[in-house]
Structures are given as structure tokens and as C-alpha cells.
Amino acid sequence: MPIQFIRSSLFASPKNLLRTLFLVTKLRSLAMGSYTASSQSSKLFFRQLFEKDSSTYTYLLADVSHPDKPALLIDPVDKTVDRDLSLVKELGLKLIYALNTHVHADHITGTGLIKTKSPGVKSIISKASGSKADILVEPGDKVSFGDLFLEVRATPGHTLGCVTYVTGDGLDQPQPRMAFTGDVLLIRGCGRTDFQGGSSVQLYKSVHSQIFTLPKDTLIYPAHDYKGFSVSTVEEEMLYNPRLTKNQETFKGIMENLNLAYPKMMGIAVPANMVCGLQDTTS
Image (cartoon, rainbow, N blue to C red):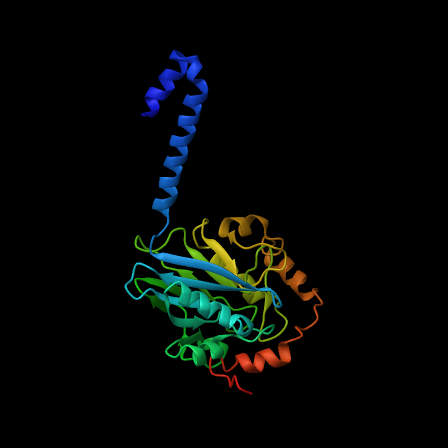
């Protein structure tokens, strides 16, 4: 029933008021549903996964429109590798890459175990991290899976080798864009800057030049969350992030006075993660 006809019948037949309002609501919701569907890529499969001990998010992405359904995992954790690989198998996906945003200090990456359990998967980390992997990426590189890709952006500051992976910019790529920020930008926070080549000034510049310049509706997916948040947007963090909304000098002062204890796993995790994806998982 056309919306124009419904509106005219609203005045012509008051007895049909409830039915008319129901139809109007239904048509509006259908219209909104169509808009939402058209603004999302039907190609991209996306799943956010969680490891509770280190409060780490792992992200599974796949191009389900491609015959092979190629997939990748971002920031996998060793403790949840079996869960992640089972999910990949159940969904009929073909895992081709396991990526890290940086050398983690609070958990051991799952890339090594993934490679032993799923031959053919290649590990990826930034060249600037100084660690080992099958593929070392640099700013401007693209990680392709099917007809989709992730853009590599250098975002050092939490560690020297931090990168942010951003979904592609183009009509054939998912919208809104998605940024997997690792620890450099958290939801209403950011990663610490007091070890592994960290720098508060560098982190501030990274976020403002490489992440806050993305479209405001870009979805922010961090490597960790400790407060129960799962996703944010560039616009939200530009408005409400209690650290990164300050000027650079104030931000530097905040970071220099956090007085945080080192991560409990640091002595084990960093050496293992420096040989990212190639560590001896039997030792």
C-alpha cells in the first residue's frame, strides 16, 4: 500500500487508525532495512571473537562471495586457536592469513599454532616490528582475500611496529569502513607507551594522522577491551576519548603518569611473538 494512500486514509477513516499506524511503521522499517542492507557489503563475513584471560579480541573476516571463501584472522591468541579453526571449518571458509597488529606483550600469538594445524596459512606482521613472519608488511601495502582487501597503515606509539588494518576504500568494498587498531587506539582509551619502543608523542600523531582522518563512520575494532565495549567509531573517539581529545602536551603528561605494572606475560610473550608465526610450539 503506498504511503501517500495510507496518510490520506488516516483522516478519512479514524476507525482504521491502529491498522494504518501499523502499516506505516512496517513500511518505514522495511525501507530502513533496505537502506541498511544496501549500505553493507554482501561479500564480507565478519565475526568478533574474545579471549577472556587477556581480554583480547580476535577478528575473522572472509569474502563469502568468492568461490574459495578466503578468510583471515587478526590477532589470534594461542589459547583459542582450536575454537577459531573449528569456526572456520564449520562455516566452510578457507583460512589463508593470520595477522598481528603488533608484537603483543600480554599473550602469545596464535599464528604459530595455526600454521602447524592448518598448513598453507601465512603469518603477517609489520616489517617495522623487527619480528619474523611469512609476510612482512609496510605502510600502503594491501592484504587481499578474494575481492576484498585490508590497507596497512603505520600507527607506531604503543610499540615501534604497530599497524592498523583498514578495510578497503571503494564501491566494491564493505561500507562503512572498519579499522582494526590493535592497542594504539582502544575504545575510550589507548595503549601504554612505556616499553617496546613506545612513544606517547608518536602514538598521538599516529592516531590523529592515520585513524582520525578516516571517514567519521569508520568502525573501530581494537585488540583489547577491559570495560565491556566491543566497537566504536572514529567520530565517537574524536569526541569522547578522554586521552586523545586532549592536546599533545596534555596527552603526553597523562601517559607519563600512568604508573602501570608490566604485563605478567611479558617475559614469555614478547620473545615468542618476536618469531611471530614461527615459534616452536612444542617446547
